[in-house]
Image 1 (cartoon, rainbow, N blue to C red):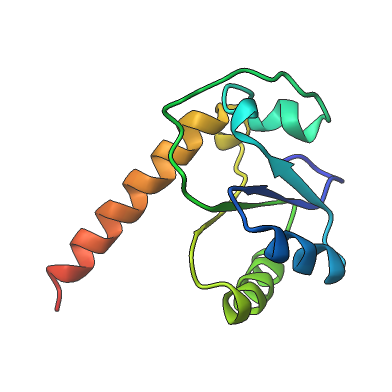
Image 2 (image 1 turned 180 degrees about the horizontal axis):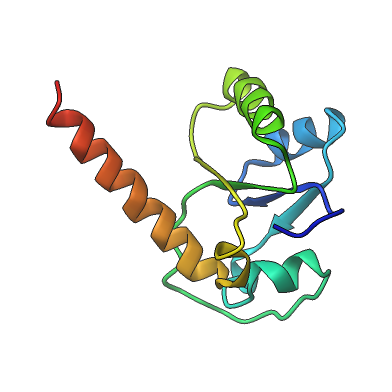
Length: 122
């Protein structure tokens, strides 16, 4: 996590939800598909290297940078009242150095693993 840069990074989030987050007072950095090969750190630093990655899934991802656990819980609760889809995650010391494309794929795999493990418990 990058200190002193509290913000939400949003990939593939509908425009109305992006606007709602901004209206709620969050600093929001929108990640476009053209930024798929950039690292989270580069994006947080304000850099923009537009490259094209046709394999990036059309999956909504919301990343919280420099939020406390309690702030993340409150934000997710608020967002889920308006918007039901998407993957939520916190930027970690490891993920900050990952490319967006890798992080999105990793989060999708993690969600699928979790869903499969939950079905086995029912």
